[in-house]
Length: 216
Image (cartoon, rainbow, N blue to C red; front, side):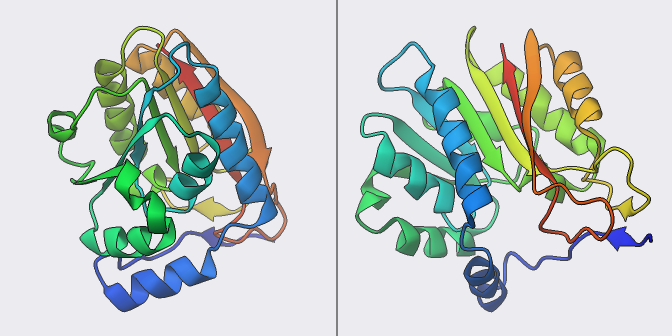
């Protein structure tokens, strides 16, 4: 069987954003991804790292991490101010620990808008929405330029699994290509830790995502 895997979003529309957030309250596999990302942050040598999330969205990962790590500094970047409203409700009392930065990752100057230099850059289910491998590659380059030596990039994003007969939207591509783009961006070490919710026969847009880590 074959078909097409992709999704259309209207992330500047308040009703669409709230509905999207309600449908994607984290499942156990997604919570496992959050824990995997947190474990990478915890390996950093500094006790109170600056963490930047690309694509804050509804704030689910931010809340998960901030509830478990009491000393890090968190900045959430998103191109949708509507998502910030949802994220603030998700975060509740934790909102005071988050800096909200409204900027589009397609703007190559986005690192100049950050409020502090990050030691870790993290993201989930966001970069594929940029629409092409080149756009993701550009973000990887900007991340490499922004991180210090020893800093980490952890991207948990939808991918196109090996062996599929389905067509995928252009922003969803193979893990091996992600790792090659990270290498080309300058990262010294890059690896995929896990492929979550793998499905080849009848994939949905919410399945097939991987946790990829790169160290500068």
